[in-house]
Length: 314
Picture 1 (cartoon, rainbow, N blue to C red):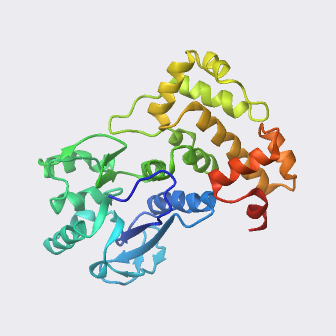
Picture 2 (tube, rainbow, N blue to C red; picture 1 turned 180 degrees about the vertical axis):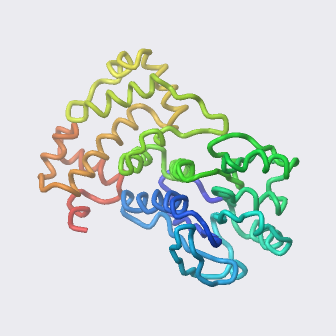
Picture 3 (cartoon, rainbow, N blue to C red; picture 1 turned 135 degrees about the vertical axis):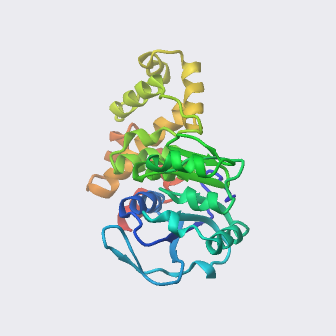
């Protein structure tokens, strides 16, 4: 697997294998979170390329033509390989493709099947004995065709080096999950806010919870009190629990303390002000709960690996 270390400096390379009649919506929802992560981290944390079976252009279901960077057979080693087949996915499942996928499994750290991509992985025997999911329209057929796969009706399933999901919205959810696994879940708060998708700030494990209302209440209080941050005991009371319980819930939901998430929410707001306004650094610091501009700049640089002034000049 890739080195899923918080704030890793290693750029993760993602190879998309596109097939004729792939979905533009699914492709964009898998790609755009990585592009947003690069923007917010102010560096190339992710890069990507496109491959097709024969190295020729492919057309999406909306007749958008995409030129590949390489052929599938010519791929070397990489971090993540994402399969995005089209509507005629069963026809794509051939012994020749099965062999190529099994070979790719020895060269790529993680294989991901998006939309109906799980079918191709299962056909190659790469999901045997593993939990997996697929687009809900194909779930019953998938479960019947591959009895050795533990088919589950989940939005997405992360089984370490095999990951599956079905549909466009779940593709977005999955990619924000993978980004949080690498760079910390707090970054997904910023990405989700950009795309107005609040639910993706909550990582969903293989057996996703219905949602933690106390965490949601705490987040709402944090987002409403950026300029004058509340003490954590007050946040906990608003959430309806004690401080220690809230800390446990945040660690379970985000892998981070409430203090760290609160700081990231405030710094996310500061980032937007730096990029989109002409306010001074001192004023931005004050508007995001920092009474000391130097402390604000240090926290900003630690989080975004650049200073407010350098970001504004970029």
